[in-house]
Length: 390
Image (tube, rainbow, N blue to C red; front, top):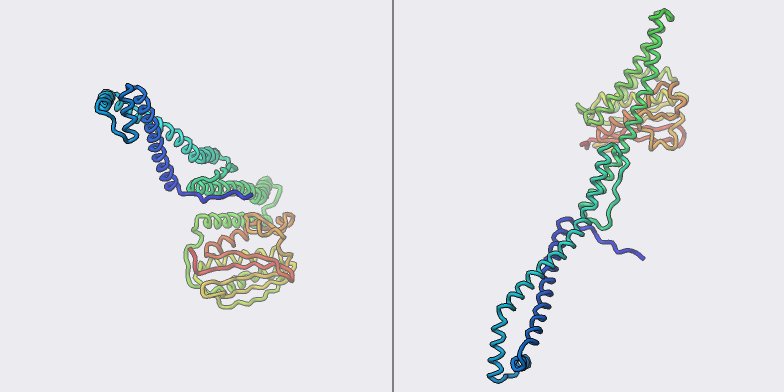
């Protein structure tokens, strides 16, 4: 059997409804109490009347006219009881009003605690977040107010986001240390060996050390790019460009690297005009070409395309015949320091920051990064850029 579900009321509406109900309840309880006590007083007075006065009162209640003597006697007794009776009625109003107020106060305290209990849970959870426990969550109360339900949902989303960020930060810190340890160890060991006279100071060793320094420089620059993207300062200068010209220039400058990887290059560079930061677009395309040279060189083929999808968006595609992406690429491929295969990471010399940098550049231009495996084999990576950016 289905439970009836009621929509959450706004806090202001619920407060107004509860206040109105409490006022009506207080007035109703007071009226009932005073009415009962008035009936009790009337019965007590009637029983205390002398027989003739009581008979006259009964006749008046039945609509009959008693004799003059009985009526006079009745009025005398009633006049004598007027003062004490009025005082008793006033006291009954006061007592019933206080009792009804007490009842309404108890009900109000109960309702207030029901309304405030989620806030207490939120406070405790916030203290947990403050102490560094990002796993805390708050259970949404049953039939709470709209504001409380929204606050609980927002808090849980914030806690989840902070927990994810904390895990990612911990992983990134470990990954940075891992990436920097090897080149720094090589530099330190080689320099120390040269100082101790173990290795000669020849050009070959210095050239190898320079390669390690260049690798460190790439890691630092990629981390700087990601930091700028987080601070929304990655794209600073936009101008009207033709993406086909930018990609063509990058292919020309990267020709020695592509030739060394023995990749056959095909192009389909159609005019694709958009307002973008040209150096950042070159950086993204070069990062994709370096990725292809590292991981798709065995395929021996690379294709670059540019296309104007509409008047306000373009796409830059890089296609290869390499091993492609693993099946779980959607969850990890654009994460910092991710690599397709751990066993090949050192051999290829990648840092795992390439796709993260490209994605950051695409998002900064109001676009996105798309990656997929081609049906005929290999991978496809596309940078979507749009004119409508925030």
